[in-house]
Structures are given as C-alpha cells and as structure tokens.
Image (cartoon, rainbow, N blue to C red; front, side):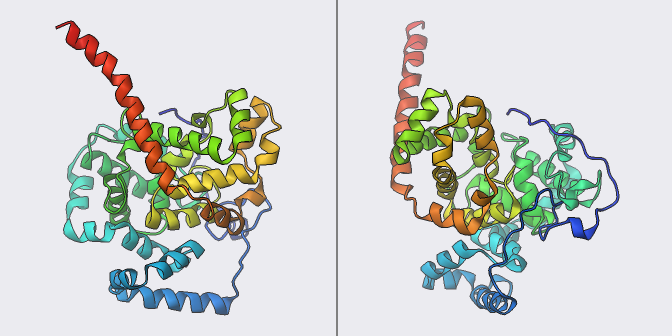
Length: 352
C-alpha cells in the first residue's frame, strides 16, 4: 500500500484544554460540531439507550429481535458517546468473540513475535497525530495501538499488518480497552456479522479493487455529468476514495463525522461507505464538474466544512439506495475477473 507522508511527532507536554475539542483532538480550524441536543434531551436519549441495552448488554439481542427498526433509527441518529464503546462491541459481534476466547489476546501480545513489529513501530506516530491520546511517543496510546496491531499480525499471519489498519485500531482504542479493540478488529476482518473485510488488507488489496469498481459505476449512474467529467479529466476512484474504504473514513475526516459513520457501518455494513462517498460528491457536484484535474484532486481531498456536518451529510447518504445495485456490480466484477483469468489458464494448459 502506498504510504502517506507524515511528520513524526515528538513527545511533549499535553496541550492546554482550551485547544482541544470534545474528541480530544487539537483544534485546527474554527469549525465546532454543533450540539443539537439540550442537556435534558440528551439525558433522556441516554436513558432510552440504557434501557435498550440492559446491564452490560444483557437485553441487547432481545431488543434487536423485537424492534430492529427502532434500533436502526436510533443508531442512524448517533449512539451516545458515553455508550459508544459498549454498543460497538454488541453490534459487531466482538463481545461474543471475546467471551469465547479468554486469554488469547494476552498470549498474542506477550508470548508471540511478529514479522511486522518494525513496520508497526515506524507507523505508530503517523496515526491520529493530532489526537492527544496518541501524541506522546511511547506513551499509553501508542503502546496500546502497537499491542493491538502486533496481536492481529500474529493472529492472522496471512494478512499481517498494513498501515491503514492503524487508523481503524486507533479509533477503536478511543472507546474500549486493548483486548476489546483487538476482538472488534477480528470481528470486522473475519466477518462476525457482515462480510469479511480482510480483503482490504491482503496482498493486492482485492476487496479495495472490487469496491472501487462498484463505486466508479455508482458515480456514473447517480451523477452522469460528474462521471463524464471524471473520465475526461482521467480521474478514477483509486486516486481519492481508496482511503475511504481502507479506513472507513477515519483517516482524514473529522471525528464528529467519522464516529457517526462508524455507528452505522458497524450495524449496517460497508454500504454506508458507498452512500457517504456518493453523498459527498453529490453535495459538491456543481463545484466539482467545473474543476480541472489538479484542482479536482485537491477538492476531493479537502471537502468544505459544511459538507462535514453529519446532520447534513448523513440524511443525504441515507436517501441513496445502493444495496441491490452493489450485489449486481459484485457479480459483474467477479465475471469480469473470471474472464481475465481464463486466457492465462489456457496458455498455461497449452504449454503442458
């Protein structure tokens, strides 16, 4: 995978609280995520969620079976931050994996060695460098991130470690312990609830290639004028959307938006990544169709602040229907790849 350049950040004193936003990130612009709920209504919302979850998640599965539409609606509105870690574990299936594998994480961290250890150490300081939890060199955040990534690289030696995994693991660590984050990573990549995502990180990034093919077709179908402009400017999704899929928008998007996307992603699956990507392009459509290649590339890497408002962007994303078309495009992609392989096989057999 292509490495993104980033400066290493030396350890130093923690910044003044006034320079940190509510997600413990250094404020780098004037945008503040709007708090749309009053304190009273937020407390009522939390009480509803606690009732839905039960003590330690004891009522969760029963509630989901009884009222799946209520659960979906509430998740789309955003999981309360104080409950986010627990709910993520419940909706991903990672809590069950943890309970079925006592002591495994400790074994992987303490007693096993990984061929990826030096790569992980090199990339640690490049993961969320503006977040105070990960800023201190060899501090608790960086140590936890190293442990989770090292453990996974041992657990699944076929996948090992790829740089984009650090942003996924890092986001999880902000809401749960090392062991919980590890098993959620396993749940995602091995497919505890939704389709396995390990293909995002395997050699050749096969799942990334599939997703980019599907996304390219969806752009052309939902926004023909923009799709035609992209073709004319030789702009393809691999130039701007790869990280959207590899890190599920955690790489360069503001936390207040990334977290809301992750709430839905863990419950509904990868289709929300396609929906958000299409919604972003649709929101900026009229500007994007006017830009030449270089400015187009810059715009696709730096969306305007108003496009980053989850209360604006996510309703747009929810209104876009992609499930059926994604299935059709996957079949088309598989057929295309199968045809590409056949001539090679014929040549090989002919030489025997």
